[in-house]
Length: 78
Image (cartoon, rainbow, N blue to C red):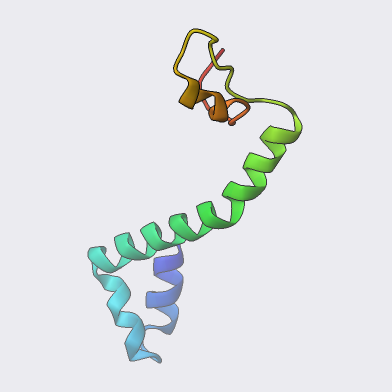
């Protein structure tokens, strides 16, 4: 949709928008957009998980170095 809007409507007036014809440019733009969204939304989402006390439980028989991971939000099902 955005491709047709940018290239179709404005492509004749702004020649620089012809770069959006290439699939590689659109793939790169989508990857960069997803990365930026994850950088913005990720910390907010992790804080919400911590506030709701959704975190990893650490077994007592595990290594002592794993104790610092207690409370880390995880996406695994319990």
